[in-house]
Length: 151
Image (tube, rainbow, N blue to C red; front, side):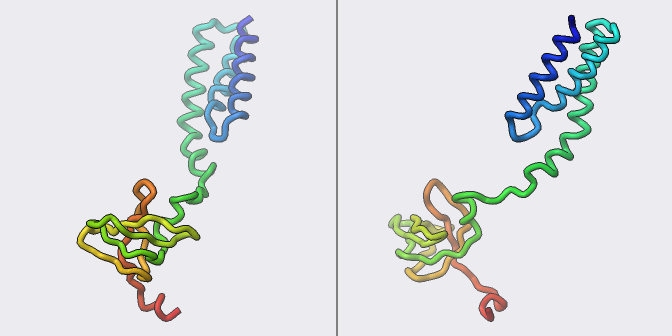
C-alpha cells in the first residue's frame, strides 16, 4: 500500500514542479521515487522515510547551486530599475530645499531630487540617475569622460 502513497507523492511533486518556474519540489519527487522503490522491495516505513529525507536533501544540496546558476541567470532590469545608471535631462530645476525638480528619462518625465541637498541642478543639465525613491529619481550631475565627449 505504501508504494501507492509514495507514487502519489511523486506525481504531486512533479505536478507542483510543472506549475512553478523555479525548481521548487523536484528534489522531493526524487526522494519519493526512491522511497516508493524501497516500499516495493518490502522495506519498512522507517527506512522509506529515512531514504526519502536523505535522497531529497542530497539532491537539493547537490543540484540547487547549479540550478540557481543556470536557470534565470540572465535577468534583465525591468520597469523602473532600468532607469538607474542612465543619463537624464533636467526639465525643471532641481532644488531639494524647495522640493522642485523634474527630469526626462526612459521616455517619461519624473520628479527628481539631487543626491545632496546643497546641490541645485539647472534646467537642461544632464544628470545621472543613481537611485529611485518612491516615484522620484535621485540624480547627480553627469560628468562625461573624455571618451564620451569625443563620440
